[in-house]
Image (tube, rainbow, N blue to C red; front, side, top):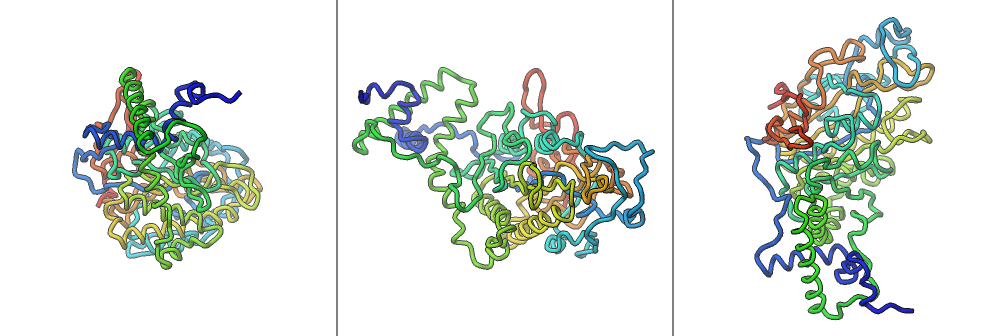
Length: 487
């Protein structure tokens, strides 16, 4: 028997769908109600001024999951050329992650000096080598773990356990956003899929849920946000715009009463806030992801038409377009979850063949990052945009047994930063002579995060939340600002 509209209202969810036409309708109600009463719901992402003088207004964080080899990219270790082919000294008491130690191996790409600063960089990054005078390198990074997931969590949140807020969540919690029509914290995953650890990498943890990252699809063939546009449901009540308005106003009053009786439930607050944002996103998301207005020169710079390089180039171009429109924190991933290699590994985890995997991903990162830095600089955005490029750990200075790859190495890796108050052409810290372990000025994620917050005008020791009996912060009880890399 066909149910009447009254019977079809069975659950609150069904009623919301039938009367509101999906998230966009509910969001529109909130906006119309605010316009009519002059009292819109408070925006939890409203921009807030920095407590201190800020040199950066926004952040673009490029993450290379899998563990990039520092000794084949940014960290020149001449001793490896002398030791190349010699057996690794097992008496050193050094631990390995997943295999036996093979012979020492020099970089698979030659190093050369570049820029006015004379920085040594490998030929893996010919385009980025032209940007070294804008980049600051931290060569003494370390992680507490050699496991991809926990190391990813530490790099993003400062903790190896899941459930802690990501840096992007902390930044938007402290500063809000300059954009009313886009999320404050946007994540652009690799088109191949999510990175190791998945969505936890951009979670809000114990912060209000509204501060978690919002994923925007980067593939040109897909909608930027899933289910942003709802199909028109069959049935329902609205037969005219006036009747629809009445129904939506009624829905909004239900939502407000529902929230009023449940104060302190950040998930509910975030969901209602997302309804408001959803309507604005129906216009802003398609616009920001529509690249047809970009010049041919820009498209060529990012190599958008290249089958292998183009997808990450698109991510980088989208990052520029997002910060142009006031998004506070953009994180993009150069690589996805780890799976068995086919032609290549789906990320930087080069156990079997480092020339094959790093050779592929090097060209991808080199093109996208260099285009992004040059594009930001030409538009006057680099000086106010902090760009960070990181990975979860490095790789060992010797081969993984008889294979042509290198194993995980949490003892040393390199991160670079540019723009937003960074002094270009400098290096901080160093690994030992072979790149096995950080030797001079060992540095953790806490220090990197403290420095980023400082550039944004935030004291990392004062941005905190009381949770489960502890005053929590992004840098835990650690961290110092790396002043040597500041302009």
